[in-house]
Length: 615
Image (cartoon, rainbow, N blue to C red; front, side, top):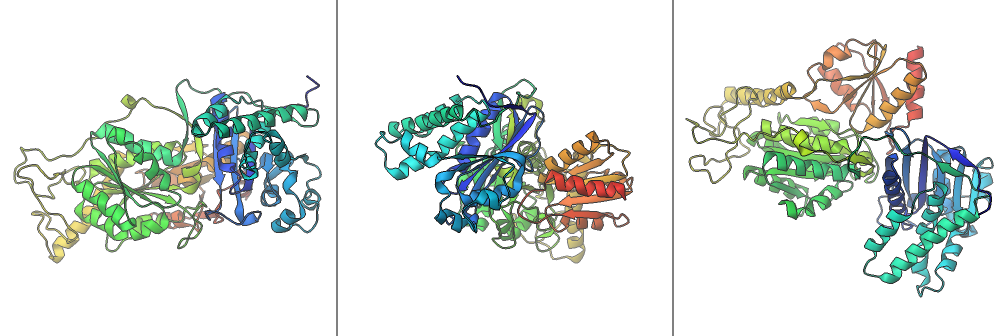
């Protein structure tokens, strides 16, 4: 073998695969991230794709990307900027050039950089490298399409089928750059295309040829070495947030002894939860794909009345449609979990882009006084945790719970250590018992103020439930003004008392800092990374990140009031900041907001936090 190119030792690397939405970039990125996880690296991924089923080819709006950040140390974000960019066409280069690290590596399929594609991407000249001022970057102009055709010319495939395989050629090249084994991807190809041996052999060959092409280019192409991470022993899966949510509910069903029912309508970016649970009939899961959002939640309410752990999943527009039915669950005091995977709005907005703009809708988006418990997951893997605890709170407190995730953590992935369910708490179902005297539908646990659950079929506990106000004592329909006031107070107090059963707020970083960064939900990874890097640079900074929003942890006010500056960072125009202003009016809150359909970057957070500390 000839002389190998320079081997770059790094603790972490960011790679982005980008091309037309039909170029297979999501699959390519997923396979690379799975292989890196199996190799032992910690990873975080970010799929980024257009909302159109088939966006215009060769245009900026049609670019689909998949970014993976992997390293020897703990990784909490998909990374701000790329070390390596794979651009399958000029539009992919134009869309992503600004996200490159100085001196990075850019691999382009030069076969697609012809006049037609350059014009579609909006380039003014025939030299996009010069136009983008990428002269100082290591640009590898590889004729990937031509090489793919040459690799498969004797396989008996048509040209269209051959070109569909060029993503595997690019993947093979990147595997060589990072000295990654091909085994996992080879096994995936064999299973994925098992019905067509020709397609299997074609993809295996082109993957191998792409890897070998890297060997040919090694004199001029840098390669990277990233050691495995030092991880806790156990069995791991590379898990997306949506899959983690589904599995969290499976765990909750197991620990509660209840059957799991999902009534939902498909909606981006929440549909994968519906799909994942539909595969779990072997565990007794019942899934109903409804004709619309309203039917989805109403079937879930019916299942809850019948004694099941009932959930429904949606995104922002669907949560708006479910508002009246959530009010019914509040009035009937039935356990129900509503998962809202937030996306850009308003209206149908940006279906495939992330945002945190549904908080006020989750808190107040119903008619009348309709308090719900509201929780938010912070990372792809802890979507499992908060799905489990959302179900636990809903059941034990007999109340609807809205669980907020977002497109970023729902589609992103991280390595997840499969837990031992014996380490997880029991979920105590507040069933009626036959020895209850003078029972009525709203007889309450005096500590939680939650009513007892009387599923149909238990003799002596037959009862109606509905959306009309109930008498506090008998459960009969009541229009009495004083009784209505009492019931409104009780329903709010019941939600407030959940604070007695959730963890107190913890401070990360330097408790004695002058500046407290406040975040909630899916911004955790970026906020924590910014905090960690600034502390390593010698700055003092503290972070309070919220997963329980309604009610807030009991020590929230004591924490907030002890800092000179409080800055609330969120991917909206200030909804959580305004919520805190409502709750604690004597405190002053600064805001750092972003509404671009993208997560924060660590760099922009660090620059802002530094400016606060220097004032």
